[in-house]
Image 1 (spheres, each protein chain N blue to C red):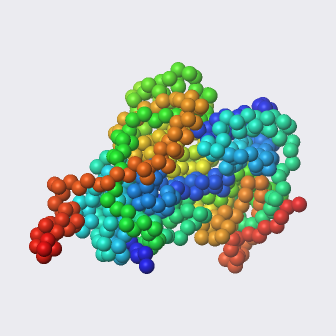
Image 2: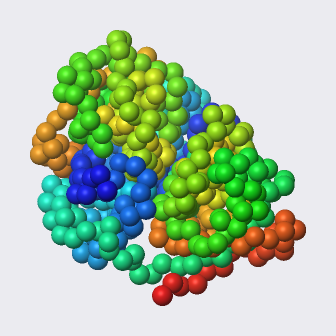
Length: 338
Length: 240
């Protein structure tokens, strides 16, 4: 019996996600999957399970969830305020929750996407090899009150009380890029201006992508409207008709006819996705050979995350958490001391 | 062709794009389909995905396995080894027969589209059903075919205003191509017919029915004939 997670309330952009469905571009289906894959690796490292299981992605705000059986949870990605039966839960850590526990996750304190991973993973049916909800493609839907998600068996129930260092990808920053399909059509001075422009994440954004705003003139190509549609990928920096960049993200279309001035490296996609409206973003072209080195180092770092998990030091100020750890009753129970 | 040698561009860390033309061109689409089959047959280590578009081929490399620059070199050699626009279309393609009701409430913009093409509604139906059209690429939504290439006379523009929604199975036309929608959708293309075709069924063992390169023969029927259709609203057979 692995139990289930019952959704008592959920924000508007709470979905089940894993690493998505790569390999279907020819079918017209983009890979989708978690907007911040680093958070999935962190959740798996904290839980001591293989990365790739399905988790709950919480865009902007979380929800209230009830467990029908004991379960371990890891909270990663954009930090959010979280409690279990009213007791505060440290973010970027793994916790044991009891049967019937009610987990409440509030709004983002920084960033855009928080993640709730469970020890046994979420066992919703797979569609085309993945459990990722891809609303635009017509696969699944955001979670709603009353939904009940079956959980898989937890292989490491005893592994709790661990945390990872806080991430630094929730406030925008520099996005490293390589050329994309139309970069060659831009004069070098436009490419240079693209790198020196201080962009900000605009209000418009979703799992498909986010719009940027920036000071100064745009980056439109004179003949952009006559471009023939070609494959687009997550990370492409598409220049829309008004000359402003639009970053394509997980659920983007598979083809597009807008020019693409650059393509963000996979390692910086979580930073792009986590940038909240108003966050400052810049672009930096890197050499292809350097990009490959950086990418491979990033993959090694992700694989090494389990070794970075450290024991969770309890914050004495967090009284409710202390109570849940039964330290107070341990001190006052005289019978146990004799 | 204005640009006989295919152009190869890197697309981010792991993508390569081989373009055969800068505008819609039937030979360029055939070249993309033929080169795709050849790349798949090479089975180079590290190539994890190929996807043809209207006039280009996308190749995705796993950069953990192979430096994409190596695949770029191999791809350049293969892409320039012959005239791919003259290559035969790949094996394994299929012919689909799809019943379609034209005009009336099933295709409210048939007369308008025919007018733009300079023919009568009857002649339009005859032209669009005279021979199979090829699936040039799938895109926009999962399994959604862009089919053609239609004769020059069908180089009609998209509408400036979007139609708020056409139903799943709708047949629309613009810029020498036909689309059968796989989900209800807004569109700037003109809605000329209705099929019972369901090109994407996520719960099915074969969720995506069509493949780029398949041929689709539209068969004109009365609207009532669509009601009795068995899923998926069309039949297929292997092409020789």
